[in-house]
Image 1 (cartoon, rainbow, N blue to C red):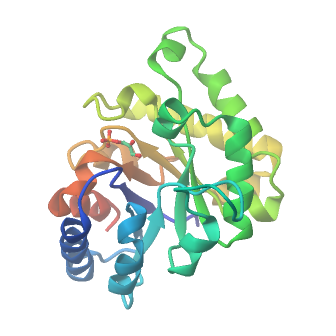
Image 2 (spheres, rainbow, N blue to C red):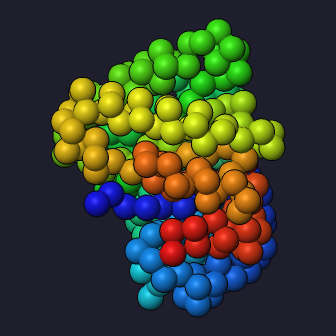
Length: 254
Ligand code: 13P
């Protein structure tokens, strides 16, 4: 059985103290309210990571992740943070390939393939994001875009490496817009992603891969989205900044 995960992506929000107090609310609520085997993941800015990992000790249903790493192991890259550094504070996950990194920081599939290798080499589990823009969907290119992102970004990994990955389908037109993909649209793409994995690896690998949906996911629409057979959880932006909303989304899997 593949793991159900609800991951919060805080993006560039919350100062240190704000982050710690939100996380403390989240851990308390998880302890009191989560009865299933799902996992809540919080992907914070680097600045919070060490403290959040300390605060998460003893809460096995809460994990912590970063939102980026540099592709190289170390060196003269002023301002960057390496996978080893992220791992050394005890973080478990790292988001890679988010559309905001692709769009604002020019990250392409080739670079993301290197970052993925670097993350895995350092024992981090990538949450690898893929998804089409509005133009691409309107031109009916969404399946091709997703196939290419998978092929160039992650399909050169070995089976063993690929098994460490979580995938996240985030249609760019649904991110931060309040416009969610319908559960049918999301399920169609998730099923397609799983089929591509089966074609490139095996049905067993495909069946074991956790595929999250992201894009204006909230406590209202999460139950229908997560009821789809190929949707294994969510990657949550805005709603992950409110403990009540985030927990209500995590609780869908109770
Ligand atoms: P929103 O939930 O704010 O649309 O953001 C989704 C996202 O980008 C998560 O990575």
